[in-house]
Image 1 (tube, rainbow, N blue to C red):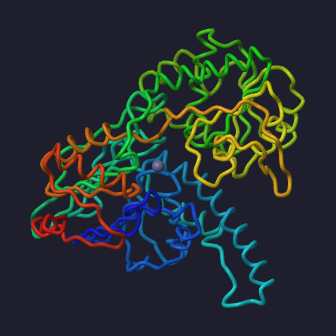
Image 2 (image 1 turned 60 degrees about the horizontal axis):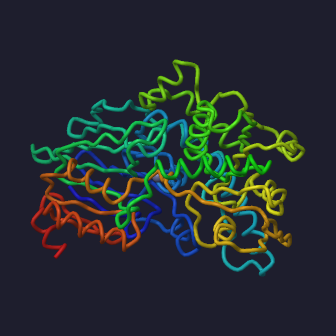
Image 3 (image 1 turned 90 degrees about the horizontal axis):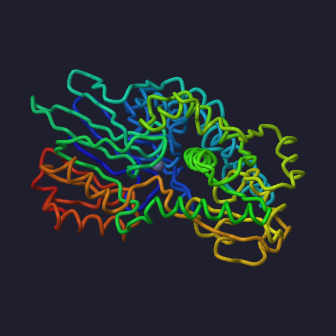
Length: 477
Ligand SMILES: [Zn+2]
């Protein structure tokens, strides 16, 4: 049995782990590289593994950096099965079609550049099309949490809730070789405790080998209660100034979490019952998918729904689907809250709202998510006084700008250590992936010091023979 790290090594994007078993080839996640150009080109690089030779893809969750290259794998000949939870399968439908549209638009832009430059080399092609994405969705095999699924006589899997986004899972894989069964646990992305809507992560135990993410392997988060208090205070003071609160938020996960908190503030009378607009077609569709998957909710969320107090349907909540409805929000002059995407202001309807609100002293732009370097969101949050919202269109920032950072979908260093303490207390080796090098090596050191386990931070394309743990540990020294 061999484990290769085809992506997500020393970085947080492009997760892809290849497990060779006697039963066949298993790929855990098939993530797209996102971010800067030198990362994105890796989406086109062929891997040692022929897509047609893959038997199963086990998908931990729907985020594009874990799922986004699946339609490309299909395009290149993969015809096995994608095994994942049913909520992840539904979210992938939304994410893949959106991603395919972006791929096609990017390819058209590249094609124009290619023509302008005198057609050097072959014409640029999209990574995949809407048709590839749709066909890929047909080979999904949805499974329930907690059910042991026998993929072949010598290979079984079980998905348990990772508490990261709707449908997210850690995956246990049992594989037998020469009569001996071993268990490998893949953490996927792990959520923090006590987040709204979703359950806390459920930790599988007894892994012989453990592959763990390390996004925040070197950091502790601001306590969630502190972030919620600040969110409430910012909304209250903006309402007192008769302003608008504009919240750029990721369509899947963050929008629903922010709605949950706002519904809570209104219910408790902490803020008056003002209109709350959700203005992003993708966020609206994602919220519909949330509604369809109560099996993923925690006890508190289920109680709210039973009491007809769903955060996705409170008085004042207004869903704007069409462009015309979206534009009409501009005519609303009383205090209100507008939640729109994209979360880093790189595209989508949020930019139209920014154009309208950046110049108003009484309004607030409130960031509830991570803002990557180089994005419009980051420039505004960093205090830039003049920003380009659309090409050639600069606006002065006169509104209030604020950020809360306790809404992370990833657990922190303490949560990761606790997870590995339970999943891999007797593991022969732990592999630390999905983190920038500082975070990954900080987590490695903590696991070695506190749990005295053999821990590797694999390089990209590195392969380990899981039948020889002694050699693996020798490799880490
Ligand atoms: Zn994720």
